[in-house]
View 1 (cartoon, rainbow, N blue to C red):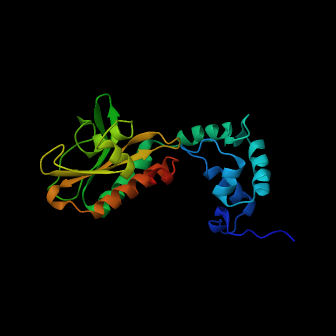
View 2 (view 1 turned 30 degrees about the vertical axis):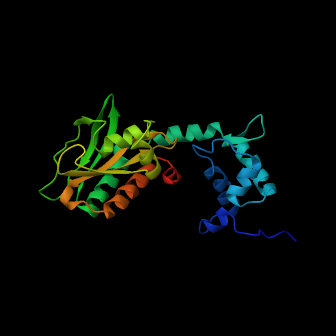
Length: 243
């Protein structure tokens, strides 16, 4: 009789209702590859998925055949060229705004504060998208406004995830977030988190701004959730937010 696994595999725990177990297991293998796990050994894949090595080998053979996985000369494995083709097709199927704007609107609905999405523009940052607070007292940044990189939570998050050394950037990289009070403008508080694409590359920073008198600690969780939602929408992994 076949052995029963000592513990459930990742695919068993998160199986698709009515789906195929073999497909769930193959997908669990693909999911263990990431920015910090670009190449993995058979043992590492088995440990990460909770599958037997013999099962992993069979699944890897099928994934290699489909060019979703490739075996390297040293015996380790990495994602295959078919992943790049699929990502190219996926990334051309929507505009950034179609992912960012709905998530920003939901963030504003939950917090009733203003949300902006910033990208780096040379030595400054550009407010690429903006959803205003429904409250009459708010900061009045507009989409298209250029702001400093070295002041405000949004600019500092962009610098942090582009490798700026020292503090506060080390702490921002650890927390995946920064909040500030009066850093860019007196009386205005901001909370920002990074947003990544499917390759783990920084896309921009989502920022929630409000009068400092309306700052709430609970807004930090809302901003982080919005960042994760955007990253997932762009094909990225929420594991990038693990500490």
